[in-house]
Length: 113
Length: 113
Image (cartoon, rainbow over all chains, first blue to last red):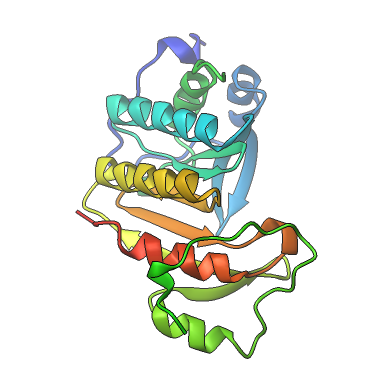
């Protein structure tokens, strides 16, 4: 499998299958800091990033936002004092698409100052 | 009671009482769009703001962040495509302080473009 970080999101039109449960461990190997969480019966990729204050957390939120706009795929970003929780999933298929793993890999490359 | 919007947050050192349950309805009258939610046994003030896309939502998140930094009191801000959920509570007292109602009133004054 090519590296996720080198891939780009492909348009997801709905009706496409979610990533098969059997594929998840292999994809997760490339983004090991991300947990698979299931909320409202929808599998999602989630990672908490820690920062030294609120301003640094908000700066990171904006960088994730820039990435999201560039790729046309948007996460949920919870900004709190000293931490940001990023959650990726694909609304249209109510689950995980390969795009979400690509975005997780790209999120990991944002510097956490 | 003076208008919440004219008040400033006071330092909360912990050990102070939370807003009494009896006071909540009166304070809530000034910020009627905010719901009282209880998560992990901690009462919080929560409001969802709607936007037309992700960029507008993120812009609002930054405005709430600026307000938080100016007042030295920080919320949880969940940024998603087209919506921002803002939650105020006071960590040190594990509940609602008058500061939280003041911040809710000030958040309401941010333009939602």
